[in-house]
Image (cartoon, rainbow, N blue to C red):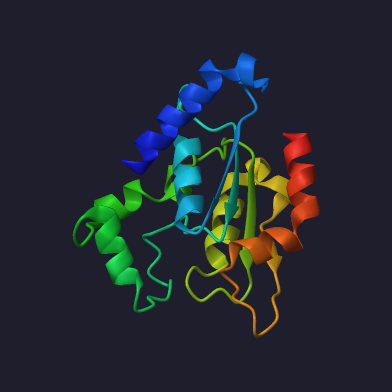
Length: 173
């Protein structure tokens, strides 16, 4: 339902582009954590409900990755997302990395991730970026080393540390 709501929002933005004074063909979506995954899924959709660019901050892009540590909260999070224990097919369908075409064609995407993130490992962004090829901004995921006392999954901390890169990305796409 969340993805459908986001598609409706994009369609509304495009329909109201002139009065809002925005370019209907340059709409980027930024999401952190599960929002980063949703942003990726929105970019994987084709049509007027597709994002033109994505900024994913610490997003889980491959829910089928069995090497991902399973924090105590993760099973509950996945049950809430899927309305019960997810099947392998559900996990694959909600994994933006697996929806990137084999040729790497995808909307421009910027990945920012904390190196010490224990909830969603940085390997999620690194692997998604590698699969995308040229669509991955700057040719690599931007991995942020945070202080030991900082939360490496903190979206605001990660965005602040790479804000200049966000601005460069937005200007370039």
